Amino acid sequence: MKKVQPIASRASLRNAGRSNGVGTDQITFTDRLRINFGWVLDPAIELLFRLGVHPNQLTFFGVLGSTAAGILASQGVFSWAGLVLLLTGPVDALDGALARRRGEAQNFGAFVDSVMDRYSELALYAGLLWVANEQGEVPFIMAVYFAAFGSMLVSYVRARAQSLGFESKGGLFSRVERWLILVFCLLLSQPLLGAGLIAIGANLTALQRIWWVRRNSRVGKCKPTINNLVDTVDDSLKSQNWYAALFLALTLPDICSSLEFGKSNGSRYSKWFEINLPQYKGYLSGDDCYALRCAVLHEAKDNITDQKKKDILEHFIFMTRGPHCNRFENIAFGAGRAESFLQLNVQVFCDDLSEATRDWMAAAMNNPLIKGRLNDTIEIHEPGYTYKRATFI
Picture 1 (cartoon, rainbow, N blue to C red):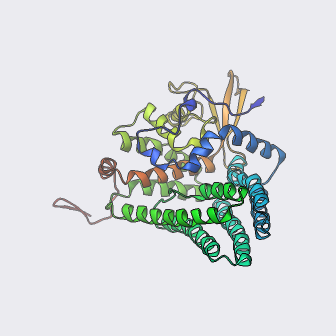
Picture 2 (picture 1 turned 60 degrees about the horizontal axis):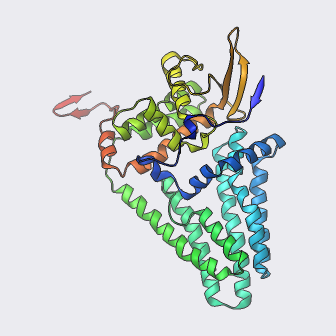
């Protein structure tokens, strides 16, 4: 048995960041960085995985780095603070991906990561506020205050929006943009410039997200079919009904591509998958995912050898826990020929499909054509439902 590193398939080499459809609305600057620098991040994650590094270790390392940068900034050595921030900041892009690689991605882990990110930012702003107060520069003090104020509000608006069923993750100054500005300005020993830019940009971003939520809330009511399906996937995972979760999750790209293009087929399914789940680039192509969908839904099989749409994989192994996205080649199943297969954590895989669907729906609600198609989707009614003049009991 030979285990190989994930390689880019023919389908996954297509540009996942380009589309004329709805999915492009969800590609943020942070998403583009992850896509474009995947050739650096993926080997780093694989190395950390092999070394046995825990995601929480990376999270706390990032917090310590930001705290150290804050302490250096409080002493007025801004260039050193910028250098420390430059070296430790990218760790924030690795902890979540490492958790997924280890098959340990959980809601609590994401919660801890988000909270630690806030501590990291505030630690740096505390250092800047200290030195601003020592220097007695009121403009500097106010710039740092409003930079911290806006940064926290950007995160709070998104969290509050998500709790109400809206997605609001875009904007001019997300955390990555704020980090880049701080690093650049600190390296140039211009902390006031950095704090001032973030004070303006972060608060504008918060207002931008508030406006998006308001716009989405006023779009009008549509049938909750898709949200109910996604919730059912989540409920199935919580109750460990793995088969129900997997079978239903595999239909989500079908439904979304049908709403986007008017009708779904293999090519549109593959396109939707690759655009909205770019993290699988090099692991699982859209064509192989569609082949898996056909094999599972039509034949209850995890072998896609006979599927016309298959790309490079031949077999899938689903696990309820453990590592996610391990690819092997030259594996003999029974008396059959050697095959290549991909090991997937069913919880992570289904959760990824659900989250991608939620993000896509948030953007799709701004498209009147898709909204109209959504109103034609199936709905299960309670007794007493009235259709035209007939009442069903």
